[in-house]
Image (cartoon, rainbow, N blue to C red; front, side, top):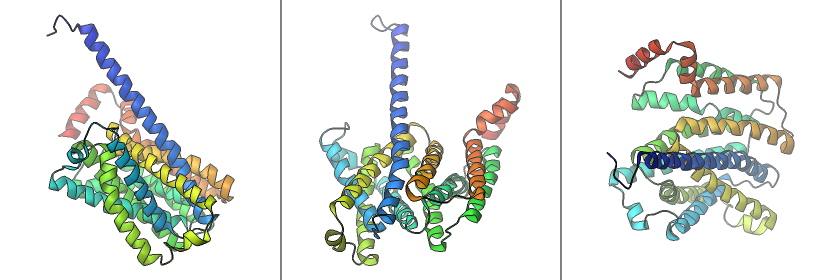
Length: 339
């Protein structure tokens, strides 16, 4: 029922404007996520390989410190419509979930940065495309979620492609491979945790990044002190301003990437986030060859093609079924699947 002041046309116009704004926000978040995702990994690899900065844990801690400073500033200047006390006044259960996300998050970036010390950028990106495999396995085993049969089928080319890339890797390093696989598995766990906090707990993305960055920074800086004994004082003495400028860019890019990733997860899903991550694969492979002269074998190219085909099948399983199955039968199958 409409009032004299609100016609049906006005309502429809308002809904369309809201959809357009949400679409615009999603496109901006996707653009920022893809751009920063492509550049930050290459920048970190440059810092480690070209500038010979052997402190991945310290760099990860600086990323978290930057997130704390920037997010705190955004909250204080009123970027989001919440006061700091209101924003952090979550139930104990939600705060515990945020803490668990912090543990997963700092472990993910720490393993990822340590892995870049040992393997080629293209190889690291190739292995990271198997994240949907870990995501679907974790959600099935621990959350009891059911997935479409095509999504399980898509795991075959993804796994086969990753195997081809392993066999085709020219500079294979067991330690680096372990770090990259650990980061990839944890990335799948992190995506599910993020999705729960952003979509079910309805926590603002800026607030979530701020709250999880504090314990993550404490954990990472402590790990840097224990495992990278010279990480605090040597960089101040040995390295020049050019390196610190690159580290500053890396920190800013990390904050933008995490904020954009949280926004994409809020507006779409965790799976969409991984698919966008695979767009970064193409960009990083090109950058890896241009900047670092990485050698990619024919077997590696075959692995890339197989993995990307599996990812496309995984993401578009519903569209594939729509194309292959009549609508009436599809609806019946959907109802049966949901029940």
